[in-house]
Image 1 (spheres, rainbow, N blue to C red):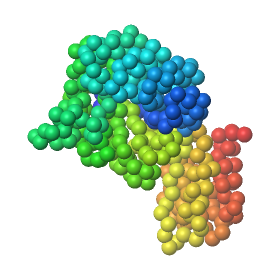
Image 2 (spheres, rainbow, N blue to C red):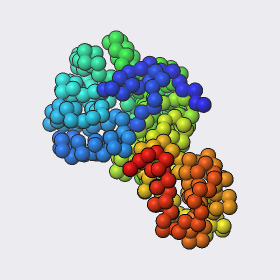
Image 3 (tube, rainbow, N blue to C red):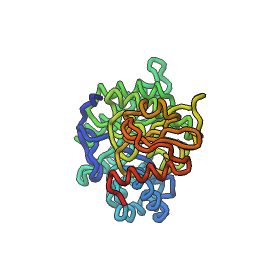
Image 4 (cartoon, one colour):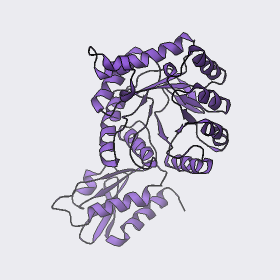
Length: 355
């Protein structure tokens, strides 16, 4: 069992972050925040996929104004992503935003920071300090006596000290790089130095294939070490895929359970069925099933059921047919290939008394 790092707990809307709360899954809208209808539609899509917190880009006053309507109609907490302009942060807090992503050292004069922080205190709005390896302070970039991960940690601590000096501690921190090892090193170090919850991710990870690999290695390594209270899988793809990927990482480590866990064997010379196609059809058929079970798709009836004995249900392929099994035991034999999914669904629905 993973021993998670103990951190302070904050609340973003009704979602508990840190302090032993489950690791939450986040993503970010790629809509124009000013377009309330499109943004709400995407938030709803995220919610259906299992997203628990959504970040919004606040680029101008119109986007900050839209927050009021978005907050009213969203079922999940919203975070305003703001760079440099403290006035946008003020407006978002006044419009009911649940949290901010803003670096206090980058919003100008101290009185500007104090205004944002004082409003955040009054309204119980947490602030995420978000450090990106590509946008460090110029002075830090030029230093040759520190590694990149050390520079990221130093940048984060500077922002932390600004907030702590203002007696503010509803803080969450992220330190993201597109380099997996740099990301891991930065989070390991910050985890030793603060008790604040950490939002974990590999930024600019890439498209679906490469991005999933980098994110799974980076986020998975940290979570396995107990580091991380929220995650985002950053992909150049429809953001809903980030949500699915986030849940996949959490389920693979046994940190959360939601929906179906799919397993399937690699193809080999013994396979006499279109295993790749069958496995994809199984995932498509049961992807929306909101039951925490494991379904296996195996290539042959000889070894398949036994090898997947840990699965709750499964299909083992043969020549033009297959076998349905539960917990490693075959319950339906020689089912025609084109009936396999229907028969499996009938068994699952019967067991869970689903219509």
